[in-house]
Figure 1 (cartoon, rainbow, N blue to C red):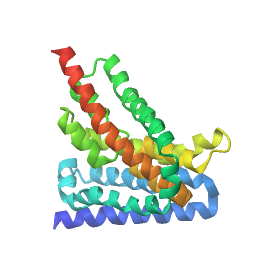
Figure 2: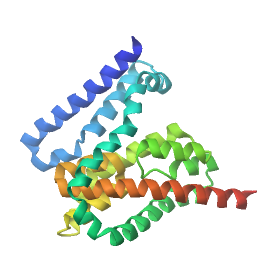
Figure 3: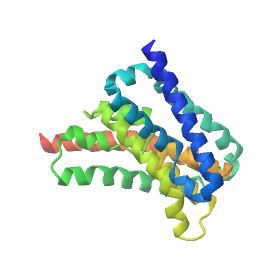
Length: 235
């Protein structure tokens, strides 16, 4: 019964957050993008858990069904990829170079600050895969001695920040091509960012989906290599 309650509450909170943003769009226009449904629903759920004195472990157990759907949901990204495949294939060399650089920057920017601050290895490698989608990131963290639950929280925070601020920051740089915007958001803010990119346009969504997938593959290769090197150094 509790499991059904948590599952229903999570879905209801997200639908409520979407409705709230839609109402704000009519009154505030583009400013409403700051109230991203994922951000609002996460804040709402945190408040509910705090006031009901419910532990995260209990909530996570009750929403295992939604967590399970995270992995297969990535398959749905194949639709915009298929539609834009000819254009993507023509630029695949440039895309691979860009995503490789972005993946490396994402990992190093995640591990260097905690490394300099003297954080323990489990914290460092919990943060390393923060820019890839949650199922991949949690598996990477588990395989490198990280804490999957911490990784999940950081991944969600990264995705929300990228979805909310990514398009704004890129717009400040001037006119950005849809392909560039999509790749940037997909590499930096994974699934949540890609959902935002799809709202901006199908082409942006396709490039973002490709960036998300390639970054997931590269990060799952690079982080274990760094982990092995770090273990050799620490030992």
